[in-house]
Amino acid sequence: MSYLTQQEKLSSIDPEFELVEDIYIPVRDGHSIDGRVWRPPQTTGQQPLVVWYHGGGFCMGDISMNEPLCRRVCSDLKCVVVSVAYRLAPEHVFPTGINDAWDAFNWIATNAASLGANLATGFIVGGSSAGANISIVLSHLARDSKIIPALTGVYLGIPLVVHHDAVPPQYLTHYKSFAQNKDAPILNEESIRFLAGQLQPVPSDPLYSPLLWPTGHKDLPPTYFQVCGLDPVRDDGLIYEDLLGRECGVETKIDVYPGVPHGFNSAFPSLKSSRKFENDGMEGIKWLLERQYP
Image (cartoon, rainbow, N blue to C red; front, side):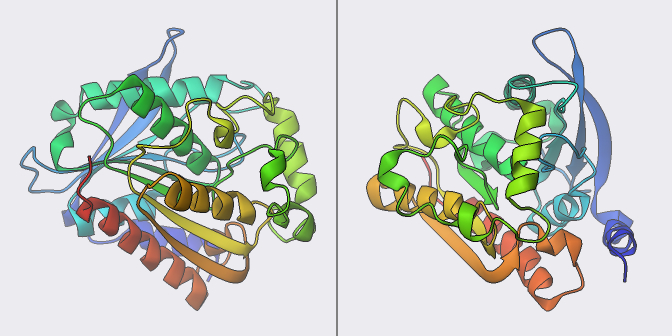
C-alpha cells in the first residue's frame, strides 16, 4: 500500500467522531497563518487542548501533514486539536517560522474557550521533527512568559534540539549520531545541511537550538519522547531527555526504536514497527494527559 493510499485510508476514519474547522490566525507582521481545528462531536467546552506543529525540515509541510494523528487524538482521547501552519523556508528564513508558531500559540491559548477547550483540563504542545523543535522552544517561552493556565505536557517526536555546529562541549562525547548516521536513509547529514542552508538559522540562537536556552530547563512540563536509532538527530532526543529527567527534575517518558530512520513511520506506514510507533505516540499523549502538572 502506498503512503498516499495509507494516508487517505487513515484520513477517512468514521466521520462521526469529529467536527473540523479551518481557521486563520493573525501574527505579528499583519500576516495570517492557517490552522485546522478538530473537535469531538459531543464537545462540552471542557476538553483538553493539543496544539500541533508539523515537520518537514522548516521547508515543507502544512496543517494536513499529520491529520491521521490529530484525528485519532481528537477521537480517542476526546481532545480539541489545533494543527498550526508556519511560514516556510527558503521564502521565509529564520526566525519567521518560530515567530509565527509563538504568535499562533498565544492566540490559541487566549481563544481556547471559543475553540471548545478548557486549558485547565489539559494543555499540550507537540510536533514531529521540525515541529518537535518548535514545541521545545514554545515550552520554554511559555514557561518564561508565565502563561496561565500553564502548559501541562510536551510531545516530542524525533526532535532536533541543537544545531550540529553548536553542540556544547559537555555533550560532544554523547553526540555521536550525527556522524554515525550521516548516510542514513530519509534524513542524513547532507539533507540536514541543505535544509539548514534554506532556513539560515543562527546556530547558537536558542530559538533554533533550545538545548542552549539561557534560563535553563527546570520547571518544564512532563515531556514524552519518540527517538529513532538510525537517525542523525537521535542523540538530540537522548541528550535532552536525560537533561530534563536526570538534571532538571522534569517528568519524562521515552520510547526508542532501534535500527529505523527518521520519519520511517510516514515513509513506510504498513510496517509493524510503524504501527507500533503510531500507537506508542497515542499512548504517550494519553500519558501526558494523565500527569498532574503544574
